[in-house]
Image (cartoon, rainbow over all chains, first blue to last red):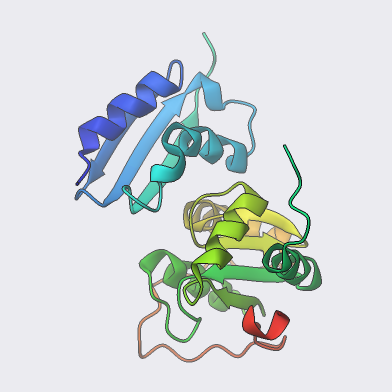
Amino acid sequence: MSVSPDELKGRIEAGIPGARADVTGDGHHFEAIIEGPAFSGLSRIAQHKLVYDVFGSELGDRIHALSLKITPTEAR
Amino acid sequence: MSESTSNPMREALQSAISENPVILFMKGTPEAPACGFSARSVAMLEALDQPFAAVNILPDPRIRQELSTLSGWPTIPQLFVDGELVGGCDIVTEMYQTGELQKLLGIEGEAPATVTPATADAAPLTVDAAPLTIDNLL
């Protein structure tokens, strides 16, 4: 079953408080551009893990690949 | 969480990570990457003339499973430097572009060249360290 970019966008934004995501993809490979205050102060590894944790074991399985570009923003 | 008593696969991975200063877990081999993200990661290390060990995770699904449990990182490739997970292709690319990767690897100097994905006709990589597979670790 394929996954829609909108589904990923919705789940990222629901799973990470204050995050905004733009997701493109073909149903298997996705690219997400994400920003949000939740990422500020975290290492790159920790920023990516925050997003990976939203999807858990679906990554590499149902979601074949998810490329991330993350920009931390100021907490408001 | 209960510790599994004996786990040869995990121990092999752990020693591969600690024994190789730069090690890339990838799909396929540096000569024949089986995934674009792995190919790009190899291409960046090659562009820096960085010797590295490479482990193909494809031959046995347990490699990937144990690796991800060990690193807490779900996707492949995974680059480790000095025993620490640096990240996957996205992070390695960002760090390459900003020069952080060069700094981490102790490579001084020139601005990064544009990386083109490794292709089948790319020059084969010469690895200074002995090529490493999980097979020869077990």
